[in-house]
Structures are given as C-alpha cells and as structure tokens.
Image (cartoon, rainbow, N blue to C red; front, side, top):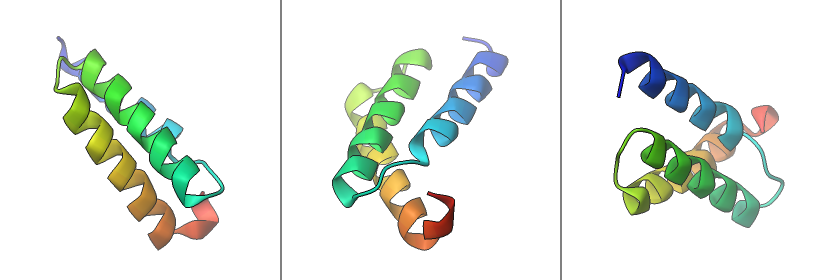
Amino acid sequence: MSKFCKAGALVALFALSACGDTFEERALIGAGAGAATAVATDGNIATGALLGGAANVAFCSQYPSRC
C-alpha cells in the first residue's frame, strides 16, 4: 500500500473519530474508525479498533471543546 493511501487513512481516522456525545459513542466511533483504518492499511483490525477507541476517548477527554 502506498504511503499516500496510508496517510489518507490516518487523516480519515482523526476526522471521523472527533465526534460523539457520550463516552460510549466516542469509544464506538473511535473503534470503528480505527478498525476501518486497520483494514485500509492491512493492519490488525482488533488492534486498530482498540487504539481508535482509546484515542478518541482520550482526545475528547483532553479537548472537550473540539468534540
């Protein structure tokens, strides 16, 4: 997979993950974006989902005005 495609997948991950009103929504949306990014980059889907969910929850906890 090209570097351009991987970079695009990462940008999509961050763009999609910054939403959700509750903790559960943020975790699920982040997990979905992480899993989709893992599929696009030929990575481990479970790891992508775990990291995406955790990253979205952490980001929205740190910067609530951006979520």
